[in-house]
Image (cartoon, rainbow over all chains, first blue to last red; front, side):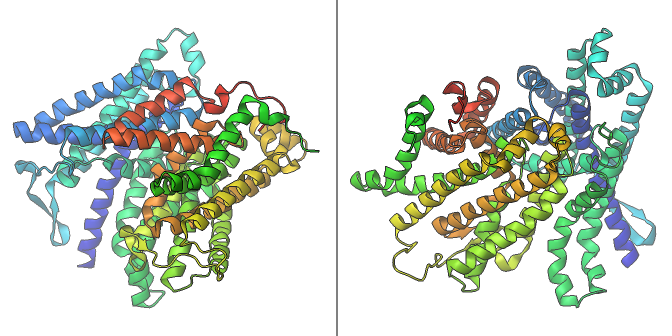
Length: 307
Length: 321
């Protein structure tokens, strides 16, 4: 029984980690290449969930929701980049933080006007709603397995894109020396817009995938984006590999902590105290972990050391 | 002899107007029989105190702390939790609040200040978020429903009684003026010069023999403790505290107040807080969805006027504040 619970929570942790990676990848790219702190990245996740849920409810097809919602939100992201964010690249981080904070307020309010105040709920698509038998008598949700699979495929895809293609070469070059890439004749504006669109698309995809599990509601973006920040800080800003590893670790710490911390604590302190303290401590675990990592490596696990 | 000249500059006139308004509001509100405005300005000044404290690290220190609302939470919860255990004496509550704030700002500052740039922004944000979730998960103190404070802090004398709205208002006013004065003294001291020097050229400060880390840590702690006072006052105005006071959007709003008023100007955060509240009050009258206008407004301020209201008042002369 304990083993079954452990494996189930392990899978939940991986699923959460994969979700975090989809968000963190876009964040870490925009920061690594454009030096832009984009707090509004979570808004794109939220918009993905809303558009995905709406299209799914209208057409009844989840595939169609994925195919349509992701480009729509990526389009919104690109419009935002061209109109607002582009002017911020040369500005101080403080200006970027504030302006993208303004964007969050705007988008949160916008979805409250367009969609019902309480948000939207959608079911898991029927063909994915069954469970899969696993060892130790576990029945695990096929839908969640599908998310894990999609996330891992996308992570491999991102890795191939960054290490094996011409675009990826420009992305890496841009991350290490922006001016030089520009001087060598690359249309850096277009590159930035493309990368931003890519990041937005990943974030929107995460939103569509999560809509059947969490629903869509205003403000859902920030809850997760702060955890995504924790992920890229642990992984080292600008590193895709770092954010993948950090996302998985964070996801696992969070879900295993929530289910097993009381048992672990009970080994050391009385069971009553353990049960009282566990929820409080487990909600802080990932932040404590982050603080610990930064104490020893102030630029994260795979971050560039400052000169 | 007092030098009155700075009062007659544009900056001096605006400053006098802003502080004067705060001083006169209770009288005007009583005359026109609108006690609502007195409450509004009491809240506004509490935000101003928080913004003034943030200005120390953000404006003068150049460190973008995105978690400053944490200290509002510490102050407010210190009062809330004390009153939960029937400890209402302010001379016990305040030392507890400030003590906790000192320890937490020391630890958090020590961790955050090891990092630079974006890392610093995100860590301050995440550390505050950690305490935010902690406050949500403790059911004893009301989780996300918050904690109702039945009795306001007591001074143990009738001379100051916080149930009296005038006493409450002028206590807040005095604390705010005290914080403004403290800021003035701090930034014109040797300590202030090191902090400002580290903002413009950290390496140079290190080379001439100042440990910028230590100075910044102390500055971070002073700012945190000052903001905790705002939290204590806020608990006494609202008679309520919930995790919401340290929600990350509160920290964002505080930063906006500082930037709106003008970074690294003494009265800037107060002006910023005032304009912030006026705008949100006016917008909220038109539509409940006022954020849809406020968000773009914020972006425009950032893009068009990065030096805020203080910047519009002309170039900074020497000695003006």
